[in-house]
Length: 281
Image 1: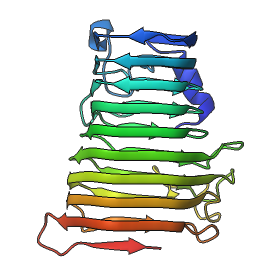
Image 2: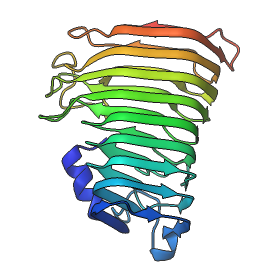
Image 3: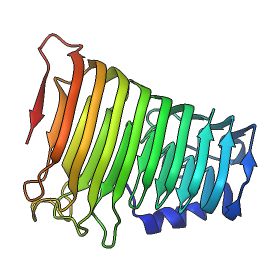
């Protein structure tokens, strides 16, 4: 996942870019970016469908985004924003086609939305707080991801996230928090609630990865533990199936161990012949 600075740069390359606005409403539209020469191969171009920066007290409703060139909806420094009734679609093998990506945002509500992409359904980056996600269907894709975090200097805490009444279907990950080893920022990830979530044939339904390295060897790999503190996380009533023998992976930093992570009523079954299990490090 890219830094906040590069996220803002990507915003300026969006098919539709809205900046410094208050109370705009976009509804209802269908945007099929293939009509504008898009190819979802991660190589042809670097434009996103929509970008919002420094936008307050606004919403998008009943919009469909098809086959984005890169990410579909990017948000930077957006506050008090509602997203509802949105459909996001891209091939499962299309790289870097994040559904909704946000950094330095607050008081965002995402509800009644269907997302299927080749990357994160929702990506939550540095400085985002007070995010409420409900009644979202995710798949295909890489799940709802916090991060990656810690790679760059001057990153900010990510706090107060709620994900509830959500379904992950055929995704590589479900609930995911990822931070870099030997991270450049000492930040806190805290006060998360995940509740009433169904997993259907998900690779890693619950995945806390504080040794994140997407394309080894990584610059920070084997140089030390992550400096991102993960704490006060509650996961309740998480159920369904996993196609991976390890359904719950808690790979926390040895220097800043996870604190107060609660798993309540977790019922995940392996779809293969072997009995599934969880790992904690």
